[in-house]
Image 1: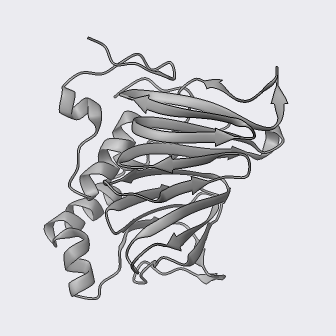
Image 2: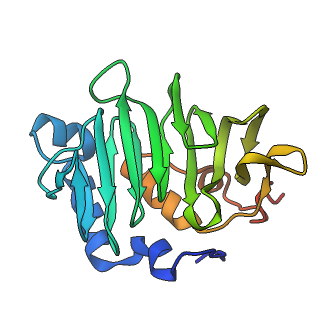
Length: 239
């Protein structure tokens, strides 16, 4: 288990992938053929739902399907794992987000996070982004973690866990090319003259990203390389 730092989150929130029911659900998802089979058989694309969540304002059932264009909200103590197209998502408790439609029903163009936190892995693609109140990230094929800190004036946190991401906040823009967790704070008002500033790697784990990548038949950059980096938010790989 990799080392991780928590700020305002409980240990069980980042260790969700270790639960026996989650492991069984993921194994069943893969054994049944993943998303292509779920679509063909008109089954749900929800891998695991713990606790209460709503879909477009009504209570979400594990047997329902989440589609692009939907709005999702999770309650206290809950978490939700689902797959759309070649992207997988784990939604933390007390989160609200929408998945906006791309070129097809099963293509997410925008993940719009309004409250809470989401870990996600995205297969290769173009014209896709994550939008938060003070940060926008244009993503390609990557794994990321996004969180809004309501107790810190809604300060936005974003980690490019691996891959290439165009990150912007206010007038600040940068291209993040990370092999192992490059993280940022984004502020509505500039801090020391900057809207976008470096951050440490907090509130998410390597294993979460590996789990989500496995759901869409992918591997993280560190799994492919066979080594890891320094988990300080700089994005560096150990050589």
